[in-house]
Image (tube, rainbow, N blue to C red):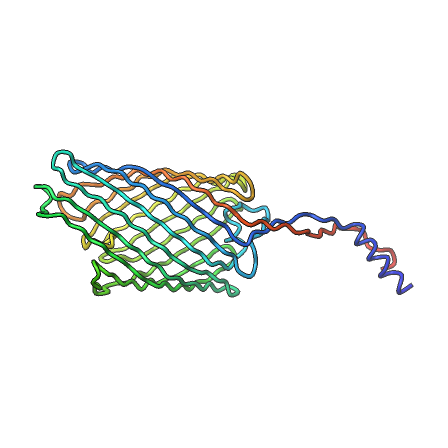
Length: 322
């Protein structure tokens, strides 16, 4: 009897168990294109365009489709990841009256990682930025000849934080080094950041980032609402003051606000669209405000997909006599 009871229990387990397909992804990839225009009263009008590509590789554990909002699953599952990002943007402007011209382009590439060790968060990365700026003078610009400047930045980043359930706090420091037209600028400053983020009520995600600047500081925020696991609407923005441009030594006030929507057509593909407006004004008497409008379209792809059987055992009555 003692041998028959375990055998009977095993037969009940196999007969009552079912198999569901569990989808996992070891990586995801993203790409976006943006375009818009800007206007500075009594100065010039212009255009701006840019693009970005990136990838996240999930280490040790893959991303699992668990029924939560799809864009939040990596955060909710505390996945270790290695990330690569490449961004580029260009602009051009001209004043037909004064013949002043201003154009340029920039690009940055980064490789970073974020890792969870129980309730601790450890991270780091390396960044490289390159900015090119060209100005053709006019009688009103104060310039006497064409000016071309190339600025490069190389900086490692270290991150340390803590994760308590759905709340995460991260502090980072960026060790910035400048190269202006091939000459190393004295490293007057690095940059410290403090990031906070949280997911609550299974529908609401928010994050805030505090950061230092030369002669000032800034705040950026991100608020996203999920009406379903496949649809999210977000509001993003920032407000800062200080030396905000790498190739400038002037202080600026800047504000930005954008509204976007992300829709997961399937578990593998997300479509994103956002529109926003930003302003920048030099912190000096009589300066005019530069107003920029921008639209962005992006996609996020999970790949490659790996399906595996997941055993689900329904609740059954106890075996008589057990």
